[in-house]
Image (cartoon, rainbow, N blue to C red; front, side, top):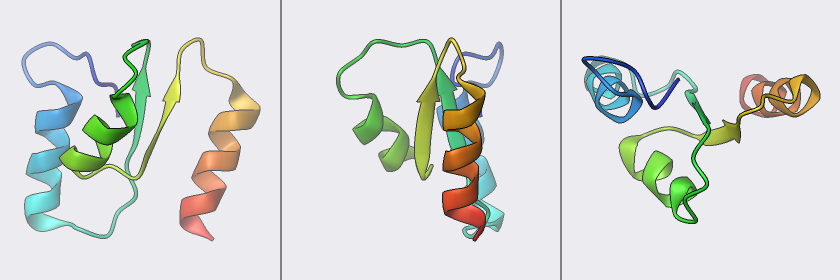
Length: 68
């Protein structure tokens, strides 16, 4: 889930998804250097986050963690 999207940001989109699906894994994608990013994405209902520039190996490792 990209956190910086026009019209509906990733936090709001996740909250809406969680209204009808609490089980699907959501991993945030962000360029933010904010120290509290993990707490923010967890509070919004996401499981984890990855940062830009995207490291494909890190991304696949995170995905695997939540689908196995």
